[in-house]
Structure formats: C-alpha cells, structure tokens
Image 1 (cartoon, one colour):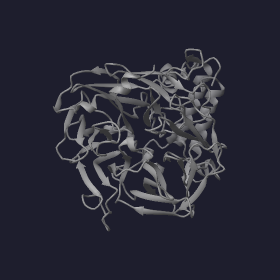
Image 2 (cartoon, helix red, strand yellow):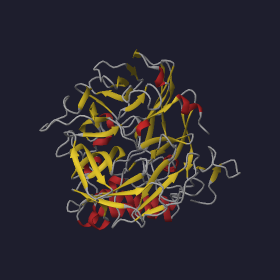
Image 3 (cartoon, helix red, strand yellow):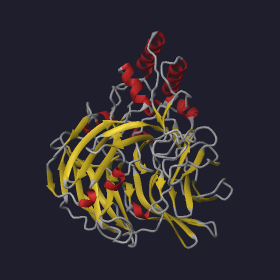
Image 4 (cartoon, helix red, strand yellow):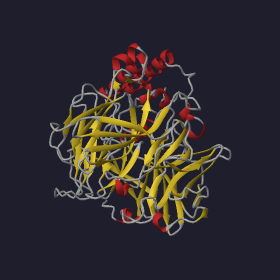
Amino acid sequence: MADENKRLSNGDGRADGTTGIVEVSPKPQKGLSSKLIDLLEKLIVKLMYDSSQPQHYLSGNFAPTPNETPPTTDLPVKGHLPECLNGEFVRVGPNPKFAPVAAYHWSVMIHGMRIKDGKATYVSRYVRTSRLKQEEFFGAAKFMKVGDLKGLFGLLMVNIQMLRAKAKVLDLSYGNGTANTALIYHHGKLLALQEADKPYVLKVLEDGDLQTLGMLDYDKRLAHSFTAHPKVDPVTGEMFTFGYSHLPPYITYRVISKDGFMHDPVPITIPEPIMMHDFAITENYAIFLDLPLHFRPKEMVKEKKLIFSFDASKKARFGVLPRYAKDELLIRWFELPNCFIFHNANAWEEGDEVVLITCRLENPDLDMVNGEVKEKLENFTNELYEMRFNMKNGLASQKKLSASAVDFPRVNEYYTGRKQRYVYGTILDSIAKVKGIVKFDLHAEPEAGKEKIEVGGNVQGLFDLGPGRFGSEAIFVPRETGTTSEEDDGYLIFFVHDENTGKSSVNVIDAKTMSADPVAVVELPHRVPYGFHAFFVTEEQLQEQAI
C-alpha cells in the first residue's frame, strides 16, 4: 500500500480502535490514455463477448436498487421485536452502481435494520471501497469482474486492467476488492469482507446509519488477502483468519488477538493455488480445506473455462494445525472423496477426533454464480455432512446428514469451536434464492433414503417461505448471552422478498419451535435484492464500538 495513505490513528502505537485503519483516497486519472483504453475495451467486448447470454443476476429481484436509503424510521411491525434483538441486523449483497461493460459487476450495498425497544429503522449504504470511489470518478464501470475471466476474452480483460493500472488510469494501491461477501465484528469494529482484499471498517451510528471509515491493514501487518469467513472465538475473543493467493505461499494463516494485534503470518504449503472460501477452528486447532478448485489460467484460455477450474480426479484434503502454531510443521493432512465446500457450520474436538460440520458440494460449476445460472438448480448436490479426522490413527471419515440442497449453515455462535447440537441452514431453490429455513438436530440420526429436506429424523423444524417468496441467510440471535441457557433458545432473523407483490420484509421466527407463524414481520420501504451473508450486531457491541 502506498506510503502516502493516511491513517486514522492516535499515533502512539497502541492497538486501539483506530489503529490500522487506512483512509482510502485513490487517485485515478482521466485523459487521453483513459479514452484510448476504453475504446480498446469496447472493441474487444464487441468482437469477443456474447451479449446475448442471460444476465441472471441483473434481473428480477437480483437487479440492483438505484439509490442508497437514509435511515427510514418507524417501520410497520406485525407481531413484536424481542428485547434481545436490540442492535443492528446487517446483510451484504451485490448492487452494481454502474452498468457492466460485459459480465456481471458485484459492487456492494449493505442493508441494515436498527432495532431498538420494539421499533425498527431501515437503511442501505454502499461500502465506500477504492473500487467504488474510482468508478464514481469516471461515472462508469472500470474494473475487471470475476465473471469476465473466461476464455481468451478473460485473458484480454486481465490485460485491460493491467494497462489501466500501468497508465495510472486506475489506482490499485488500495486493492480492487468489493467488500461484498460477509460481515464480522471484532475488537470494536464491524468489518465488511471479500476474500480478494483487505477488510473495510464500518461504523454503525446511533440512528442505524452506516459509515465507511476505511480499510484495515493492522498497522501494515496485513499484506495479503483476508478471507470473508474469519472465526471469532467467543471465549478468548481472538479472531482467526487466512488469505489465499495464486502465488506462493498459496495459503497464509493469521491469528489476531482480542485487542486487535495481528500476529506473524504462518504460510501453509499446498501443491497448487486453489479457491479456499472458508475454514474452521476448534478450541485447539485450525482446519484448512485444500479442495481441487484450482487457479488455472492456461485452462481458462484453452478450454474457455473460468479461471478457477474444478478437478474431479483429485481427492479433497483437510489440514489440521494447532491453532497457535508458529509454522506449519505440525499440520496433519487427511483425505476424503472429491468435493468442494463453500461454507462450514462449526467444528470441535471429541476424544481423538476433530469433527467438522459442513455443507459438501459435488462437482461445483462456477457458471452457477456467474450470471448464467438457470432459474432452478439442476445437478446441484449440496448437503450437510459430518466429517471426522482422527488425530491418533490418521484416518478420516464422513457421514451424510441431509438431502440437497442446503447451504449458509449457522449456529449459536457462543458455541463456535465447541460441540453444539443445532444447525440452521437455508434450503436453496436456485444458487442464491432461499425457499426455506431448516433446523438440524445433530443428536438425531438422519432418515435414510430422503430425496428432499422435510421434517423427520435429524430435521427438527422447517420454515417454508411459501410460493414466490424467497429469503436469505438466517442469523441466530440468542435470547440470553453465553451458554448457560438452552442452545436453541433464541430467534432467527432474515430478509424475505415476495415476488408476487414485489415487497420485501425482515422476518423473525422462533428458533426453538420453528413455528410457521413469525414472531415479527417488518415491512421495508422498498424491495431489497437477494444477497449474500448477514450478521447481527448486538446493542452491547454498538455501544462499545471503538471508532
């Protein structure tokens, strides 16, 4: 990162709430070079891009909303909002501000609902990334998109971006991420995350409004990308994270202390570069996923594939490393049948075994998330699994826990890294359209032969959103903090869109009973597009924000 970047810091070296936050002030340039590169890009797109292919994620309720929404108060509430929901419910999702040059463009908007004393306020704001600021400067999309990276066209679009950077049309000193994937709270800061970049720091104001403060680089100690799915240990307060790269070291593991200090990097050696979207922790270990979704630019060009290509001939490998290790010497690798994993639910230790609860996907096709997906899922097998890694004899095993298709698994996060009983997942109708919320009981056995998810066996409850109604990731909010009360005593909160009426809402349901009657439905002032991950910031966390 450029030396001239401004830092929001008290200057005395302490790891307080502002240390490590970089004010993002890119310096793009207009002029002849910019115009010439634009013309070259338009020519490439005209000659090589098939504009007739469907842009699924720019239509229907995937389509972006045109404007931000300042705090809108006193929303209609049907039912009641329990006191434990005092705080801010936030969800990220793609919302391109400018029309894409070719493939889909995933800029990010955060949708928030401030809940206080039974009343609700809605707000939506863009995360003020370097990428967004520069595209606002030009009034048009300028950055390469992941969806562009396919075939020879993809190679040319990479070179267009490199050309813009070399000509100083674009300023890449602050990265080019979108912060559009997930959110987490740590050390007094709400972070917006995307795995190709560093975190962006957000502040939640008292009225629920959302303010982007800058990029977090942990006082220049973070020099690599940062996963969208770090883990916070609820007991120690530490955060565990990693980054992946197409250059060695392909995986880098980090531990961040409770007071926000990022410890030295631990490189993890794997045979070739991969996409690693998630990982897991237990009380004593970190679990890394070396799964065969490889970064292969040569295949992208030769076989007209996306830049990440799944190799069905390779085994799935899982590395278990003591979580405070200073190097990788003690990592233990385990093999299981070929698969890919986007999201884990939780992990823990049980005797000699490390247990991982995860959503296992067979034969992933990234075109499903590239704007070419059909309205319904076909040949998409994403199922809840239990995987066990025996640290004594070196053997691994797995057990199927559900039918397809389930993803976005969540648990009571006071049990992160510890043995728990209940998992809440989303039932998928398409790659990003959720038709129901399911509750799994890990103490019960799954019913054999099931071809769809329905109540019985280990499926303790199912909340069906109904015809034409689709939701998003459901977040568990406990009625009481800690683990002294029953694990499932709390609520699930999530966004819902009704395609029949065009209206959106936030729903709250009872996580214990999974009753078909919502505890609360909050009507929103306009539709909210389908999105990615969500998070609940408690009232206590809002008040202790360190910035």
